[in-house]
Length: 73
Image (cartoon, rainbow, N blue to C red; front, top):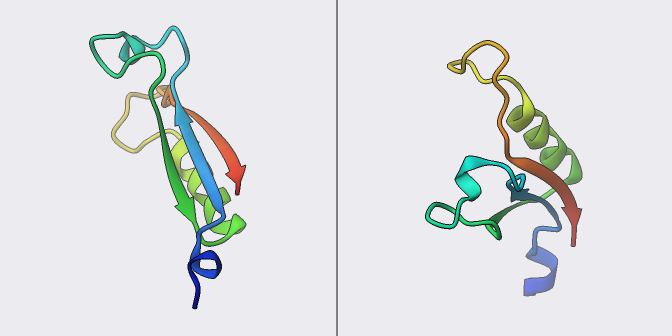
């Protein structure tokens, strides 16, 4: 197998909205971003759904402020 055939092609880009307190320069910073890659589009889409839902231990109505962008590469 070559490296190209084993490369994960479906990802999620994580960013913060500009007004998020964690985007402050002394914390994560305004240019913070992270990526997570998946083997299939379906696996990635399920992960986005899970990340975007209200979490079990959050206060009612709280939602993550992270922006999830689906990417293919």
